[in-house]
Length: 272
Image 1 (cartoon, rainbow, N blue to C red):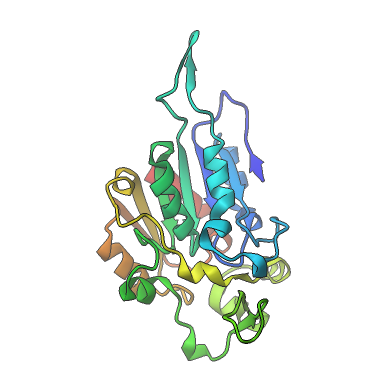
Image 2: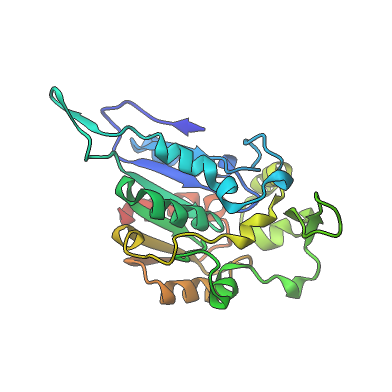
């Protein structure tokens, strides 16, 4: 799903990357705000999301899961025309915005396309330079909801003698964990559109241990103080271990694109 305005009005190209279980649909409040300000916006459905037509239980690897974002960035024009010449060394750059587990896809893309990314914005997101490489990465980047009991439904597409193939958040826990401050209408929409996510997401690793490329990309982190899914101390742990150029605080639940879209919009603009 993509949206844009008159070419003369477009200022930036934002690529919005959803978190686990969500999809391009979750940006429906932020997208018109950015578009109304003259920006081009692309909203990606990662493999298994509601708009992807892929069964999340059939996605076997993180590379397969995040392929739609990689394909979008790879398809950007190779250069910009200047008069009668094309400079193949100048790439149109995008601003990646990743929410929650979408931060993994954003960082993976930074490894592959640093020359095409102007800035990366992480919203309560997994900001790990190489994915789940260490125990500290797992501690900070994977939600611990054990205090709430059994909140997940697991699917075993390869049989009960194999690891689960997909994970879903039970509907009765969705508001408490994801949307505690969000409008009831948005929670109702989410209860219809949320899908399980591929279990392979929890094994995401990338980058071959090299940070020189990704450290060229300007990073901004937006924290969410009332977050149950990715707790504030987890967010702060990732920030401390891989400091971004700027940290901006929101006093919201895990999903500020629902609970505070206008504030989120303004903070994104101020971060540019």
